[in-house]
Image (cartoon, rainbow, N blue to C red; front, side, top):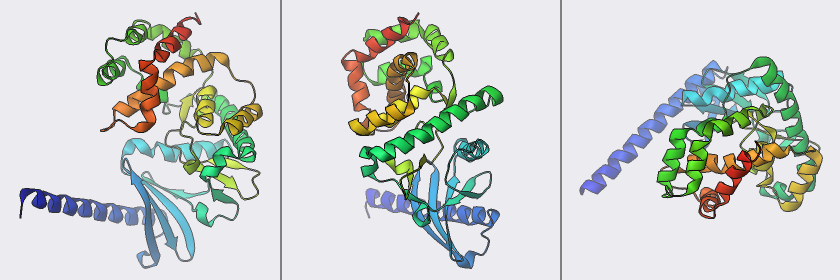
Length: 311
């Protein structure tokens, strides 16, 4: 046996052992969630990513989805479901939760909703009802932030001076003027950000996180791990970047007036956020290439100069 073959066997064994441990953890969590009879539990893994495990569960002729968080930082999603319920914002049904897992409605078995499909990105009717969900989130979220001052996830917190330095070296663009513009004016830029109205923002739009009522009169997003404090336009841009041109136009018409200051700031910050997340990964992802091109073409520099022009 070669050393490579030996290491392959070791790695496979380690993965199997890890998977077995996760399954054991899931059964323990299900018992805490009220599904304690192991003989009546049928588990089917949907996906696992970044320490978040999703399983479809059949239990005594009832059907659920259980979401288990291996990393403590991601358990924030459990609290986010509670916040949205408190605000009476539409979510999928939550049956129970622990400090590490949450038991949810299985949308594939829902009488009222269906899972989103790629075609929804160009469906005008879906765009209209989706805008209504975001309006509800943002209006109620703004009042919530004012009253609660909660210490929630903030996507822009990833933009530190250290991460800007990391970015300029990782992208091999250390000689580009944009980095000095950002670092020399860092406090001024983020003072302007702090002046913006804060609200709850979803931050993670895509059709795989979308649920649409079967009569197409309602839509809602689910998976709230990135839900947090932000400003409205960042969500609007996040949605419209995935919708078709016509659906995006309808979404904005339904949503209403856009704050131009928010747009100017987001045009710059969104590129930085994308690139920092991208370069934190083991391999640079294709979805970040356009943001990197914005650095090469000088668009990021122009975007930050526009923020400075706000003063």
